Image (cartoon, rainbow, N blue to C red; front, side):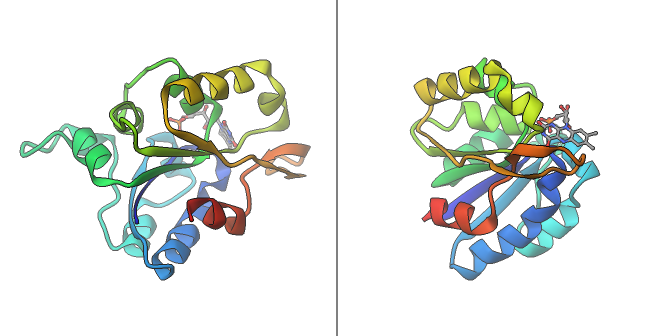
Length: 174
Ligand SMILES: Cc1cc2nc3c(=O)[nH]c(=O)nc-3n(C[C@H](O)[C@H](O)[C@H](O)COP(=O)(O)O)c2cc1C
């Protein structure tokens, strides 16, 4: 399967190169793209090496004269996995905003499966906007949601909001 992974800026983004490696071992073709803020937590180079494809970022949209990158990526994939999914990017998708490579690509997915793996602090997860936004996205996209897990989060708080473990995400992609 051709899997497009969108990485947004939860600290758990550091886990994604390893996830890419596991998906590759299962025989999937994987392309990654990152939000600007996520580059604080994960190296595009690590994602490129693990996926054996360029890792795309916002600047690539504007330095490419041959084709429209977000449309090309949306057409390429059989499934788009957003992991980790921030509250910010979730809110943008739910409201149809497409102001960067990731949100523009998602807006162009059509019927392609959109798999969301949210990760955020419990206080953000518990805000009713989160469920409202997930419900909205489910109305407009062919969506699957990988629920977060309860754990001690990066900021020391304990509760719901950690990125699901790798096995759960790998199972969901099957
Ligand atoms: C150290 C740190 C950790 C963060 N972790 C999360 C997180 O787990 N989930 C989340 O929704 N936002 C988190 N944020 C906030 C997002 O990075 C911020 O909302 C950002 O604008 C999201 O941009 P993006 O959705 O384009 O990646 C974190 C910010 C910092 C500084």
